[in-house]
Image (cartoon, rainbow, N blue to C red; front, side, top):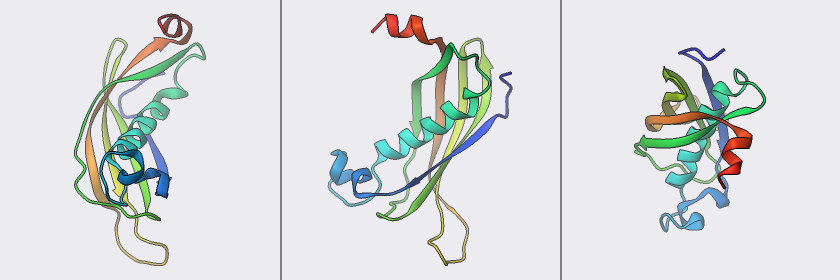
Length: 131
């Protein structure tokens, strides 16, 4: 059952394929903003996935986020989404991406971005029928 407060955390180890230079969003060898955003969306999707019937899923409709710290290749990034509002089929999430300390290093995760994300519950067959 969908309820406010549902959360999920998705994890990504930054590889060359995830850099701004590779995806074309910039020319530096750091985590690309579109990849961070995709990780946030993934966390939101998975936060509610198990609470939906098999014939339903969610699709992203809106995301507004910051990206305030660069992350190098090899960094571990976690994105956590929390369901904050339910309005019929519309689901709103608060999303946060953090860079974890390097292996063997002490310290706290550092926020690299956060924002708001909206998804809609859809029927899979009906949705794909519109493609």
